[in-house]
Length: 404
Ligand code: SAH
Image 1 (cartoon, rainbow, N blue to C red):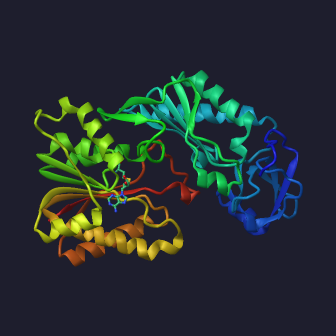
Image 2 (cartoon, rainbow, N blue to C red):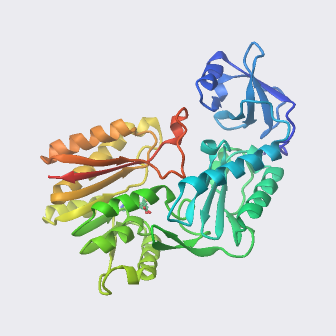
Image 3 (cartoon, rainbow, N blue to C red):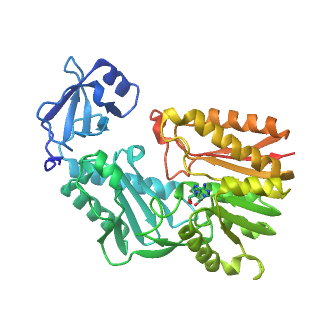
């Protein structure tokens, strides 16, 4: 187990190799364990000064004693008062969202490295804040206190909940910690994005409860959607509910019954908006691969198909297999689209680049003997910022294409 963090003591120093130093000089914020030259006596989760092998200072970082990412840079300067820096970064993250987020009360408030708060994720769902702590340094009690007091002071949430990921905690050599309320009593709420309402239950669901990174893509997809629509890997109905007002019929497919039950409750919340009252979204519990195969074999046709599968490539090694999986899905969807049909196809695998994804789609179009026009090549919503020099912060691809 890790020792008690001393994240506020900046006296520890870590020396890194020339390769690690040049990575930082290129604008990245990570130093891998293999690039640590010395970290003698540095406690787990401390704030450290980073220097190259000649002793030249490179900034301040958070040290992990167990992760392969040993250092995460937090400032190019020495940091005398870590809680004060945290408060400043939180204020900046909130101010950034105020300038770029519209039409929603649910969005990512703090996105780890992209907000210079590595290891910290905070999502807002209306009046409930959901936090995830992913590194030793951010798990320190002083950090937790600073975080909750700053968020409370600035946003006055009804409650703050924490979602712990047991696998991440194990990798960081942190003791297990139950998910649950950190402050306040309210664990569920209703949030609104693009005028569509959703249930949120802090203690259930996947990730932090909803896929907030798709928020802008939902609105974009709705602009093109028409006719009969299929939302494949629909989870709690994010795309389906946005498409429904524009389409004559929508079906959502997912293998998770609990997700579909929430999707159905979400549809009921938005009843009035689904144009006429007898327009019902159909929720189908199935393995999407099998169902698409059956549907295409039986000659079913659609005007709009959304594909938003879970990440197929969890590591670089999985890339080839992942691309084959994406191609199979996209090929089937393309074959089922009527002329003029809309394909909304996504990948949340960081290891599949945008170029790989577009090439896969081009190959699928060739095999399907269909011509595809790219209407939009999109990414994650702006409240999940991308740091240009930290490629790992960009992970979501969402392509909207028209089939002729
Ligand atoms: N489009 C959703 C997010 C999808 S996440 C949204 O915008 O909210 C991926 C979903 O795929 C999960 O809900 C998961 O239950 C589902 N899933 C994973 N494997 C599946 C499979 N083989 N068939 C159908 N659904 C699957």
